[in-house]
Image 1 (cartoon, one colour):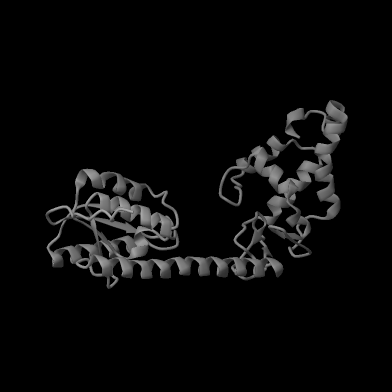
Image 2 (cartoon, rainbow, N blue to C red):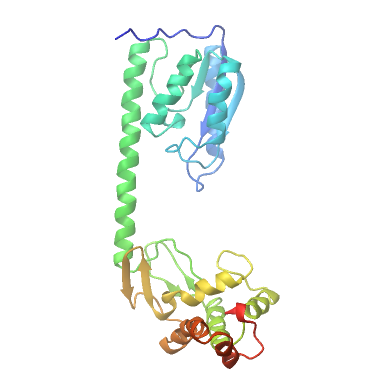
Length: 289
């Protein structure tokens, strides 16, 4: 087996910087803090920053980051001597992706300097060792965090607690049970009532949209969004999260008779065709059901 190719750093003091934060819950100031620290580091070490890259609210567990990929593409052309990072996990939280990224940087003559971790850049062997330790710690944190999140979601589901799934007609707070939303529950009841009385779906949508009502995501009502509401068993009190189903786990918004009538309309149309539709609502076009 041949010896590893010797690393040859690009000459000069030009440097590039890469900044990233993971969560949309974080503020952009996280990027600003990384930038400020990197610029202070560059000034203290006599580096000249020629370009900065930043990815906002994108997890480091994925390499599908636009500016990350742009940086790896452009290093061959820019040929900087240094890449300044806040920490090892800013480059990647996936160990394989990190190895591949560092391989690309190494082949292009770029040495990595870390601002907030004690990793020397003047001793290659020590740097490799310290990088491995910090990367292992970051990877371990991700696995542990994922397990804790899944454990928390499972616990919430088993106890019919809010798990982040927003539904029209309900309000939800983390680690609490759903409650009826007095502002939007009447909209759900109106949809069921009008539909079971034979009003076409598109006409229901037009009525809701015309009065400024919106879906739980703030969008205009469509036939598809109505269909999802009419099929949602939460409105008869059934809590569902993945494979976990808890009858009575949700506050009921409609009674069984109304809900079953809403489910029966499409089946009646399938069996009876045009005639079945006319019995329900003579003027409604078939495609509304």
